[in-house]
Each structure stands twice: as C-alpha cells, then as structure tokens.
Image (cartoon, rainbow, N blue to C red):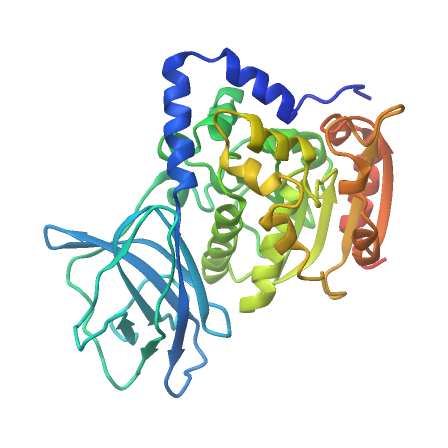
Length: 413
C-alpha cells in the first residue's frame, strides 16, 4: 500500500505557483479573473396549461445575423433556473423540449424574455453581476417560428459526450490534468474532457460514473475499473478541468446525462467519487432530485471527500496572489459547502462513505477527518468504511477495492 498520496495539497499547489514563469502566471491570472467575474442570471419559466414536457432555458448570443445558443439547461419542476455566464450581451429564451434532445424543433413552443412589447430584449451582464429576470411565459397557442440561422455552440467537451475511449489515451496525460487546474478555459478549448465511455454502450449493464478530484484524472480509478464485473457494469468517466467552479461541473454532468438518457434510455446509474469529486456528485444529486429525471441514482459513494471543505483552501483564497476558482468552493465555510448541506441525501439513494487515515495524521494527509466524516455525513450514510492509507494511494489498495466492489453489487445491504 502506498504510504503517501500522489495528489496535490493546496500548500504544494501554492509552492508550484511561485515556480512557474511570468508568462504562465499571466495566462493563469487572466483565466482566474475571467472565472471570478462570471455573472449570473436567474428567473422563472412557466408554461400556460402545463404540457408535462421538460422545459429548457437558453442563453443566446448574436452577431452578423447569426444567433448562437451558448448555454442551455432543463429548468427545475418549480420553473426556476440559473445560468452562469461571462459578462456580455445575451438574449434569454425558453422552449418546451418535447423529446428532450436539447434542440428547439419546429413543433416545440418557445418564448423570449422581453419587455415594453419588444419581440425580445437584450440582457447586458457586468462583471460578477447577479440579475433576476421577470418570469418568461410560454404560451403553447402562441407559436414562435424557429430562427433560420440558429446555431448550437459546438466544442470539444460536447463532442466527447459518450465518446468511447481508453484510459491509456493521451488525453489523460498529467500535463493535461495540470492544465485543467491552472488554465481550465484553455483545457476546455484544447482538451475538452467530458463524460466519456470506456466501452460501447450496453443496455444490459448499469453505468458507473467515476468522478476525480482536484488535479486528478480518471486514470486514478484504473485498478477499480479493472476489477469491475463486466457482465453487470459499464464504466463512464467524467474528465473535467479541476480549476472550474464546481457548480459548472455538476451542471454539465446533469445536462449531459439527460442528453445521454434521451439516446440510450438507461434506467439507473451509480456514482463513485473521490476527493473533491464527492462534492460535485452531491451537488449533481441535489439538482437531479430538484428537476426530476427519468433515470435514478442507485448508489452514491464518496472516497476521502472533503464534504465540509478545507481550511488550507480557505487560506489559499486569502493569501495566494492568484486564486483558482475551485478553491473558493473547496474552502471551508464557503457558500458552496454550505449549499451542499442545505439538502439531505434521501434514503432512496444508498450513500456509502469511505474514509482514509494515516497514523499520526489528522485524516489521509490531505483531508482532515472532520471534513471526511462529520456527524451529519454519518447520519446520512447507509454504511461507513475505514481504510488506512493515503489520499489517492488507497484507490489502488486491494482490500479497499474488494469492499467497494461488494458495495456496488449490493448497494442496499
């Protein structure tokens, strides 16, 4: 069993930050500022004579008579929505997505945010602005013809959805994971990441989604994936730039799974999350429960997850000359940490908590016991499992893997 973990602590990340070149620091700082300046639009959509179909809200940019949907997502059953966007000018619209394909088809009703009897109204967002719009009302009887030149933003992370890939692929190289931490916007443009398959989809097998943590990548789960029962499970990996705000990652996971369900019609899935990935998975589950999906989550596993944040991340936010966006969420007592625990995991989702410790240390060398194993987490968990080992090294430990596989085979025991 490895005695020390291979992943990065916030302290070691800060040290590395001091060692990088001035040119690299400039790029890192630029992207940090861009993410820090993200704005937020929230509001509500209602459908007259509710059709019972999902509703999508979309942010649209336009120039030279070209309109592009750059972000869209299903709204909650309550009709509430929230979009995180870079500062700029947008149109906001919504449509009834009868076939859940995230495309506004010819037979689907829609409406745009507008005021003063305009057909649509520009929404201009400043840095960090939080704007609440009046309710958008979709009247199915009042048809709006789809724009002839509407485009859907195409990028690598979208192209990778459901792509069959090997864990030996160069996309998972360490330098790419490092880029995802330091320059997450470049990662999205150059690498993409995304929710990918390790084998072709099989309707007879349950999807298992593996979610890595800060500075990690899916290869950390290699030993576990190797031991999966291939007659029962199909492994999917979420590969994301770990420097992004975590809310964006969980939004992507939810939207992508809804899209994959439309194509493959799976009924359930399992979530295996390590470190910061456990926070993303919990956020996803909350959003899934809020909007209601046609598939269920039949297992939620956290492994060494800082569910109550990290004090050294909070110090990094206070002391570092450059602050990585995910540190703000990872910091103890952050708004993100608080939001995670305003919701309780329902008993219908079996939650199995794995924690790790090292002799003479508080926790696994990265995550203190108080954040891995709080009283509230113990109350939510169906079962709790102790492991001696390091933060990441435990993922290759035979005894740990054996216990995890048993949990996956029988989540409700």
